[in-house]
Image 1 (cartoon, rainbow, N blue to C red):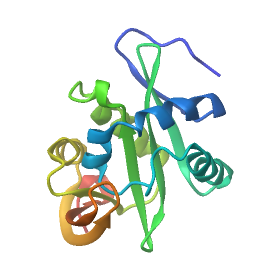
Image 2 (cartoon, rainbow, N blue to C red; image 1 turned 180 degrees about the vertical axis):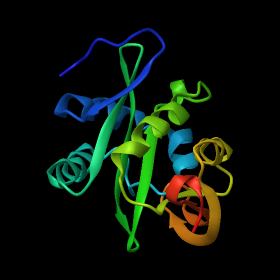
Image 3 (cartoon, rainbow, N blue to C red; image 1 turned 120 degrees about the vertical axis):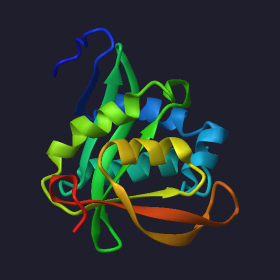
Image 4 (cartoon, rainbow, N blue to C red; image 1 turned 30 degrees about the vertical axis):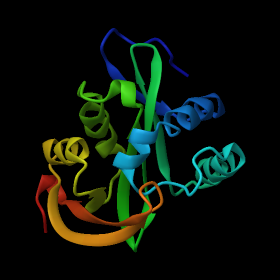
Length: 169
């Protein structure tokens, strides 16, 4: 497994068990949970977190990668089935927000997912995630509502779609 990273370069690699402690610490950040909205009921429950990630690691249908930048694990990105559609999701540690890392990671990740259309969801007030998705060719194709554990209320979300060659079909 390659761990040497050129300065400033965002790379993806397979998730390894050692990454999980970083992922756990990142998802403890209160404001990050608020922005993600759809989180676990208790982000501080390490056992539940590890059990969830064990199931992700064991599921060969889920494409999952660690996002690595400047020698650091900065987050993760995955594609999985949800609501009958292929979707993507990503989590970037708060200290790495606003640096273009999520956009670069998503662009590098998209070739791993050979199915289109591909979907993503984000709450309507998560401007950063909306910009990442739009920069990578996703466009809003719908709206939905759902209960946010992180906020304790129902929230509105956008549904994004990436079609063949970035075009929505």
